[in-house]
Image (cartoon, rainbow, N blue to C red; front, side, top):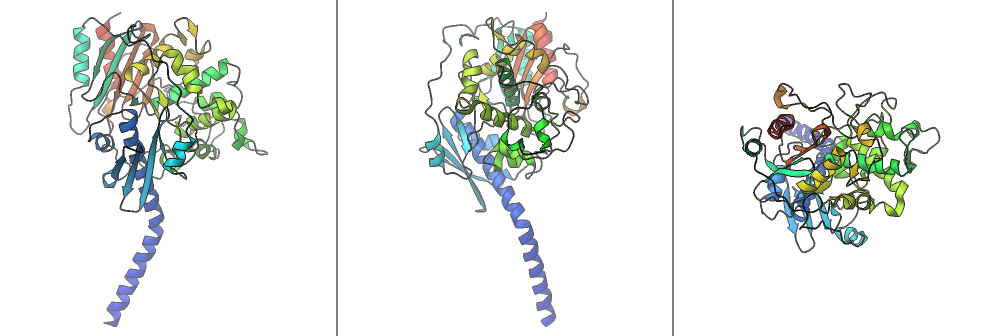
Length: 459
């Protein structure tokens, strides 16, 4: 009996020790899961305004990197806030604010966030009686080949790799020639671009270069790197835009405690989190796709622009293109999450693509500095396969190792998690927007769809 008690006591002590070691990591993972759930559900309900009660579950169910099925979501419509809870271990809240979207209340209450929000200014909306892109009137002649391509895009095939296409807009020679939406989604539905937000921040950086505020061959101002002898102070804007900064950053969404997940869902200040990373490589020598890099840029923009920062994306870019739906969500510190959290309608994402198809001009007015589009679509010297330019993708892999398709050599892409794409083909005056929720990967083939569209529109 004594021996059994001793064995039981030893086993209990070992279990308690293991639990004590594991609990901090389990708790942090629970915080990441509840934060992601609260933020994503808040944006779906209050930014995208998708009223279907199943929307939060639909938006979350396909993500496998954190145990989202264990998260309970509670919606407070009066306070316009969403809470995520998990086993009572962790709780995170996200609050909606007009003009800013949703923000995780990290080291702040929902009331404090809402009190700190600047008053939302009226956003000019394009005239509905004008043709797109000046307004929102869309008329196009039916194209049977294009319609067949869209039929396929909205048809589900293998249940293991669902497409979940939500919106497609095809723009040819400056006008919409095809458009379709999933049930519950329409032309007025602002949808997440995820990492397509990076391409928008590349454009904002270009505007600052055009104004003489920043230089490509010089470091953008960042207080965190100004210490004596800090080697990061030599990182140039060009190296940041080309994802060749040399900063150590783990872009592994499958690990709940990776840099990218902790930065996006566990940090009050995403830009400061990323800026604290040390150099792993000499700047310019190594390519590493990193959401942290874009949030460093966003933080540097804030330091450069001061009080003008909050309105900068809207005044410098969105309003000038008529992108009335566009907004970028900030973190709790007030810095835009430039890597991931922009929302816009499919038509407004198409307006952004059209700016690049038109060499950075809008109705004859130069928005981006001359040569910026060419620079954005030029392969980064350190990118191993020439697949990346300056915050734009130049080559995409096809699902399941499918053979490459022949696309015009000047094709480039804004791309985001879940199958968000803006394809730009300047030589064919073509922009293709696809928004969806193809998670896990393999459910959507953007190059294949682009090839069908190109064939359908002809020359």
